[in-house]
Image 1 (spheres, rainbow, N blue to C red):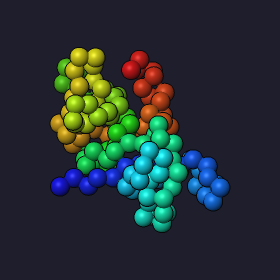
Image 2 (cartoon, helix red, strand yellow):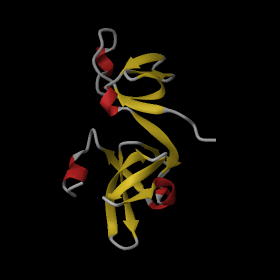
Image 3 (spheres, rainbow, N blue to C red):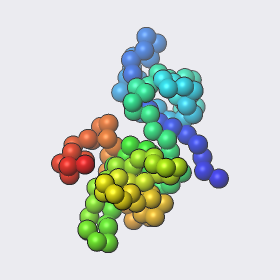
Length: 128
């Protein structure tokens, strides 16, 4: 059974200014809060940065979240750099306009190299 959890980028709040900008992991309370066991409570997050855990890990054992950028080898095109999205009930990499590769088919050979919030330039240079 897949563990249901989320991550989001913490934003400034009166009581936690020292945590601004860190990634918060836990369960989603609503669009703006994630309850984090590690930080012992609900943390205000940027709702645009919230992504769900896919239940999968990359070849190095790193958890893969919606919004992550994966690097992997595609049979036809060689090395690819694509973002993880949720589409039609499953997590996929946005491989091409008319084709999306399920993450569970490539996670064993993929590596998380960043995410679209902290490392958008990794996707922008590819024109995606």
